[in-house]
Length: 307
Ligand SMILES: NC(=O)c1ccc[n+]([C@@H]2O[C@H](COP(=O)([O-])OP(=O)(O)OC[C@H]3O[C@@H](n4cnc5c(N)ncnc54)[C@H](OP(=O)(O)O)[C@@H]3O)[C@@H](O)[C@H]2O)c1
Image 1 (tube, rainbow, N blue to C red):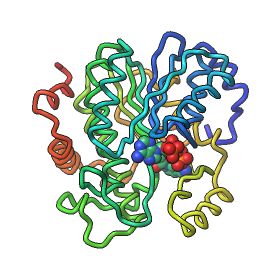
Image 2 (image 1 turned 30 degrees about the vertical axis):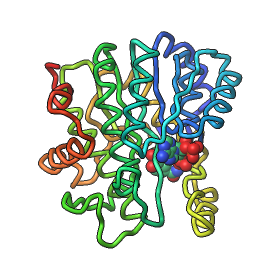
Image 3 (image 1 turned 45 degrees about the vertical axis):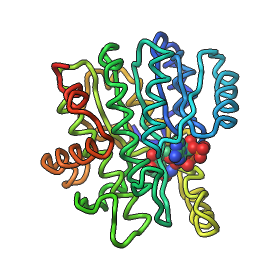
Image 4 (image 1 turned 90 degrees about the vertical axis):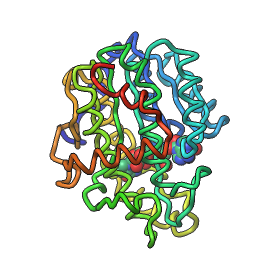
C-alpha cells in the first residue's frame, strides 16, 4: 500500500481499534509524532504524549482531545537528550499508568552543527538513539505486563547511507550533520533488530520504519541555513498525514500483530541496509548504549524473553 491510500476511509475503518490500549508517543508536540498521537486518539487509545516544552505539550494535548473527541490524552514533559530526564519520564509514566500497549519512539532531530548533550554525549546520538534505548529499557516491564505490546521505532531510510564505527560513534572526529543523523538512524534499525531478538516469546514486538520524506519543520531549528533546507523539505515532502501512515500502521494494524524485527516503508516490511543486519555490530551497539546509559546488568536481562 502506498502513500496514495485513502486516509479518510482507513480512519473510519479503524475507529475503536485501539480502545482500552495505552500508548506513549515521544516527540508528539510537532510533525509526525503529533499526527501519530492524534490518529491513535481517534482510534480510542489512551494516549500519553511526551515533549520537552510544557506549554506546547498542553496546547497539543488539548488540540488532540478536541480533534479526536477523546478526553484520554495526557502529556509528560522531558528533554529526551538528557538521560536523567528520560529516567524521570519513565518513572512518571509508571506512576500514572499500570499498562503500556504501544511505545512509539519518535522524537528526533538533525543538528547541522555539532553539540553535546548535558551528559557530554554527541547530541544526535544522545537524542535519536540513546533516548530510544533507555526509555525502552525502563518501560519494558510494563510493556511485558501488557501483552501483546508493541515498540515502534521511527528510523529513516537515511540509515542506508550510514556506516557505524563503534569507537567513534558519539565522538566523531569530523562532524557532519547528515552523517551523524544517518548513523543515528542506522542505530535505530540495529537496535530494533537486536531488541526483537531479545524479546522473542515475551509478548512484545519491536519494529522500525521510514515514514517517508515528510514536510515537517524538522530542520528549522538549525538557523538560517536549516530554514533554507527546510523550505525544500516542505516543497518535496509528503504531507504529515501521509508520513504518519506507516508508524500508525506499525502501532495499530491487526496485520502487525505478532510481527517483530521488521523494517517498514510504505506500510510494508522491506529490506533495510546490509549493515543493519550485522548482529555483532548490533550487540556492540547494545553494550555501548548500556554502558553510556548506566543500565545495570539486571535491567539488561529484563530484555531477555524469560524476564
Ligand atoms: N521529516 C522527515 O522527512 C523524516 C524522514 C525520516 C525520518 N524522520 C524521523 O521522524 C521523526 C519525527 O520527525 P519530524 O519530521 O516529525 O520532526 P519535527 O517536526 O521536528 O518533530 C520532532 C519532535 O521531536 C521533539 N524533540 C526534538 N528534540 C527533542 C528533545 N531534546 N527532547 C524531547 N523531544 C524533542 C520535537 O519537540 P519540539 O516540538 O519541542 O520541537 C518534536 O515534537 C524523527 O525521528 C525523524 O528522524 C523524519
